[in-house]
Image (cartoon, rainbow over all chains, first blue to last red; front, side, top):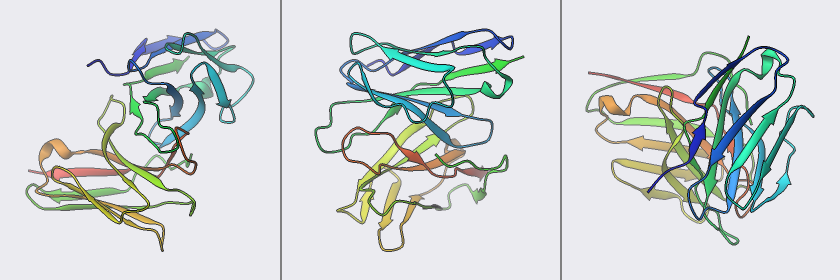
Length: 116
Length: 113
């Protein structure tokens, strides 16, 4: 079946512009996660959704970052007034319903964002 | 998540040999752990997971070992192949249910043909 799909795969924009990144999770996956990966570094948690609700937004770096999820499916991550330090690969993952146990997160290939 | 410098630890292995990649995790309350493989330009790919009620789990050519006493995780790859060359990350889940992962420092595996 289809995996996690992210678009665009690459985005180059000028400092100060707004960008919107899209994630289409695996069908039936109720949890959706956004992470950020800077060059040569590990993954940094940003925000996650259970259905359409975001229980934990603690990883968002500033109020320029926001995310939403509608219909329990597609999510968009928006960065307003982009700065050069926002340049990174933005990764989305999803996982199936877990109950009280844990389920593996499956990742898309990310959006590589470059701020000029 | 943790941040690391630009230079990842690197493990170089001869093709056909076994590889062992180690990881120290941070939270003693974590009860679920995952190993991911990341190739250049791709997202992390799930390899194998293990829950804290186990100390060993085997997959196809891979074995994960968990030592909760010293908070250590290892990934063993048997008969390493050129296609195994990638960056490998361990991740822990400090909370139950579907909650964010905390990723460890990656290790770059280079397979010498």
